[in-house]
Length: 422
Image (tube, rainbow, N blue to C red; front, top):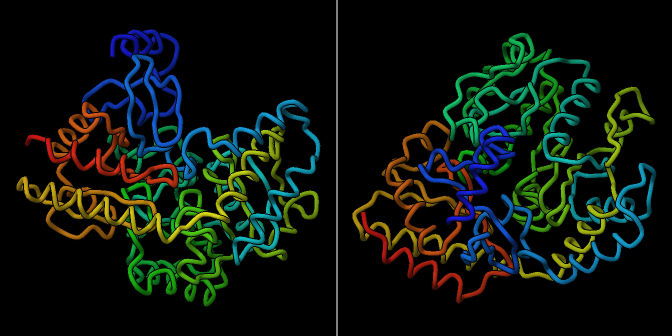
């Protein structure tokens, strides 16, 4: 990793921590980051000519793998006509139509540039629509780095053990109410106390930023009932789960009808993108239809839109059930291999997402996720990376599978795991 080391040293002189997103620094796994030269299919290649099977996939969006031919062709074609217009183009209409067709609850959609923009804008819309201030979020769920969401945010905040929310005014976070994921009683208590001022409940329908944590039976249904009862909106953050848990997202998988949905990752096919959408009555409150302002110069830019259209069009043809079956096989065989080495292992898996937690107890929320043995994870991560397997450098992230991975990659991954020493 000689060239990666040189680049990291150079980066630290000009970029805070040497990275443009904190977890990439690999601090929690006690190693330096790998600088990537290129990606192709299920593989990435470092600047030191090392080949890795990629289970990070740009943190989720590359469900078709790197440089999928149709996505590459679409972006190259769009590039010939321009990169950004700051004006409407046909491609943004086409992608909006695909999203609305796929997601049961979405009647209108607004394009933005990131998942953070999507969640931030959806919360502003919910507050403006309901004329209320407070939001309920769940401990360990990450919804981007907007001020309101950095209370107990899991993911990178937890990975780096950053306390509280430095730089965020206390009166801003005061409007964020916290509950444990999968604990309906706590949510109901908050509604009984603050119900007339709660604009929305914002939730990852499958948590992906405390590791993969599934909703327990009745949890999402209970949130829907409580928000209806108290006149609040239910916002699904499907930045990770949208078009990954199923083509219709987690809302179709679990048959829940949220008021607003936040999207990102896959709908850009690897390019920066986000979106929020929902019921027409609510979405028409967004400017210029209504008084709630949100804007973005690069929103709906033709490169991101073309990548998204190509990705969703291809995903319509893919076999999600087969990918889920193969992901479950991989996760359970990894668990079996590690347990034979005397390690405590829990596996949480849904569709093409899974996380291995090194703990004896089931993981149902952030509190139980934090009981996972970090020292074992560090050794696991370092040895797997040395063997050519690229995993997220955090115990609080998700492992992503893709349609580009094949039996060869999964078998190689299992062989590397069998050779681990603890």
